[in-house]
Image (cartoon, rainbow, N blue to C red):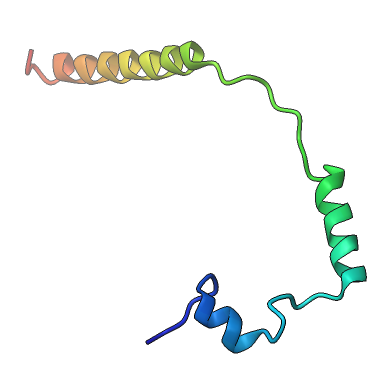
Length: 75
């Protein structure tokens, strides 16, 4: 039976108290996590812009393939 990091067996077997950090270190970790230092302001997702880009690429590739077919006498 393999224990993975999330099971109670793993915690009780590998961590005596269930917490590997001292209270001071845990407080510092909580301070950094709560500070938002890695948060990035993002623009809202624009689904219609994505749809337009995909549609333009599709139309462009279709036009190129149709032109190639015309050049080779397929159409």
